[in-house]
Image 1 (cartoon, rainbow, N blue to C red):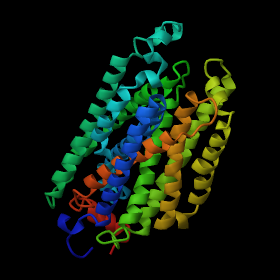
Image 2 (cartoon, one colour; image 1 turned 30 degrees about the vertical axis):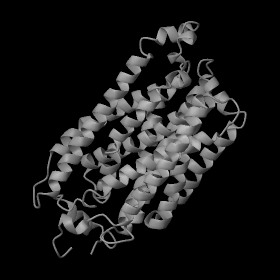
Image 3 (cartoon, one colour; image 1 turned 45 degrees about the vertical axis):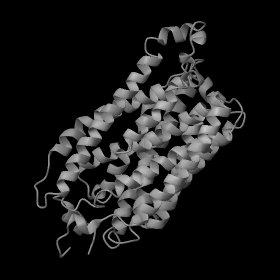
Length: 397
């Protein structure tokens, strides 16, 4: 670009503030519905709340993971979406607050939190040193402390970079992101065991952590594609974000669609071929009583259709089409978390209104926080040493 840029010239478009206001309204109505559900049917409320909490937390974590990948790879794809990823990751303190209601209903959700059940089950007694309420809550607090700490450092240094035009490349991003990704993978894998796998404490899968990590990354990429498509319609991003940027994001989304399908199919293939009585019931429950149609929908709409559409380079470069595909996958990510959790509580396929209320309520709060955090900083890191070069390579004028 011929003229120098400054952070003030890249304020977030006004549409973000409109999103914040509407999301807050939707979230408020959702919370009222959640309160009504918690009073009238506490067990169903906590069943639904667990899935909603896991999805929105994994979305924030996916943003953090992609942010660290960007800082390690240094790719131009990450520069135009860094602020989106930072805002998404900075919602983690909100999710820690929203974790508190879940702690009040653990016996409704987990067998290992019911002393009368543990007393009759030797397997649960064997797992009790790990699966017990105080240690479970402590582990979750530690996870959030580590995730929030990494987010704080990366976003703090990024904000400092905005105030220092012409500053040299800051190596601190990479020094945190390298070991940070290792910590991220380990803690998210452990969290997936604590929050989701332990819903059925007799079942286990050695690849389950990878499934959750892949799903978190895919959810974050869908958020990125939808948000960037919306922001690129108005100044200051109109004319700065090009088809090449969307092509890069489309390729990453395509890769994560395949990666997630690979993880989930590998888990299914290993467990099904082994045919062990302690493993196979998890799938038998989900292959009957109406749940098999949810699985079929996931195969078709979470993988097959997005995979086929994203094969096209033209579609990946088209902001509107990519955003629509991302929206479809985003919704199916919610369905997938529901499919992971709900069959443990309902042998027959059931979609209770509280499942919708919790997803909408927590989602409204999450998007309100996301939009608020996004509008607090310049929409592009214009003082990054590689920013000008990255835009030039992608054909910005």
